[in-house]
View 1 (cartoon, rainbow, N blue to C red):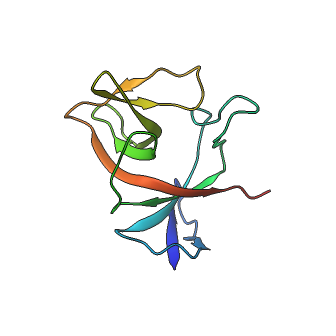
View 2: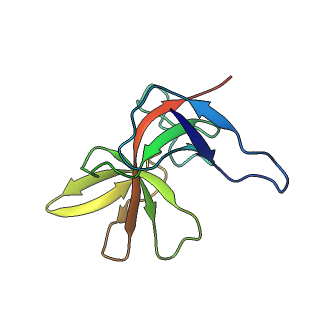
Amino acid sequence: MQANRLDARAPGEKNQFESCDYLKIGVAFWLKMCGDAMAAPIGASPSLPAGTLVLLDTGLQAVPGKLVLVELPDSPTPTLRMLIEESGRRYLKPLNPAYPLISLDDNCHILAVAIEARMKL
């Protein structure tokens, strides 16, 4: 399968493709990580530093412990975080502990679930 890599591209930049053997359930696409909210401390895993490619699938069920792409009501761009559940409430947890938990409420929309990550050197 070839999945389109979705990321912020400069005007005029061409689409890029990344191939893999994953059999998609919904729409599958690659996301290029930006920033350091998903870069875990040294030695912790998983860690998704800036530049890492993450394969996402819109057809998978979002369950606690999975990395999910979420549309937040107060953000212009989707956010990738780990979905966790605590005392019956769901939260979005960054892998970098310097960033806060985000409460997942009815105004948040889960777009896709992460399948795999790749880093190119």
